[in-house]
Image (cartoon, rainbow, N blue to C red; front, top):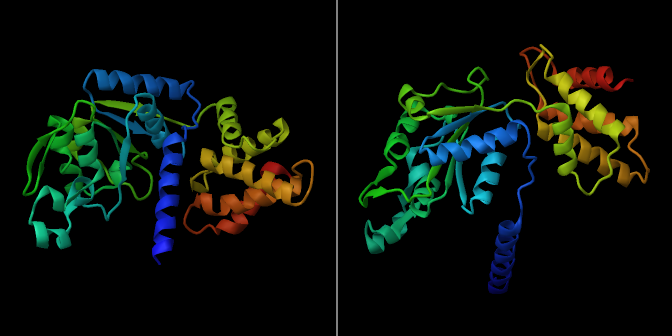
Length: 301
């Protein structure tokens, strides 16, 4: 058991080092370049921005790239009904409290508090999925750059603390509205949509560097994912991630089959595997036959 723990510690430290060396893969052009510039302007002007866009357009990725460029860590929380203020700020470890009392040593900080103490970029991902109670717990950190930690006192954030809200469009299923109080703290709104065809294909290629993808295959993948974005039967269409997944899966399937090029049958099969889970159809529509029909129409039988 001891040898196993020592080996785990060694491998864990190696994986930590690998993560620190990893560079963010992102295409900084067009809307992404504009968003990057506005983030920098907001930070310099001491304004809190919000990034709005459908799933998979790169909202969190652009924050990772921004933190990387400015030599800071990115801390983030993804909002949902289960998030409480303590998940943002932190909480006391009961077992340590028994020995050391309600001291700093017994406190386990959350990502918001860490970003305030260390001066990092704080990403509140899908902030409009938080309850209004949790949203309102962010008013002091976002407005005053300070926060009261129960039993420990009130702290002022480091200079490098930069909070950014990201959210899906409010009309999407499962999203709440922002509380009026929190909305008032978000001074600048950056909208990201699906990128132009050429940019999206560049993103797919950048995220599939180990595969050879022909222009013809990339065109078919883009035609398929873009078709999901105009269908009235689909509530949540294919994201950029779906296009990347189709490209990578079809290339890997082709390699396993020892074929030289991605065939129509392989591309159709890969697309079906990906889209069955990636798309959300209107109520009453059976996903599997709907995806099969969509693939046949877009890629041909």
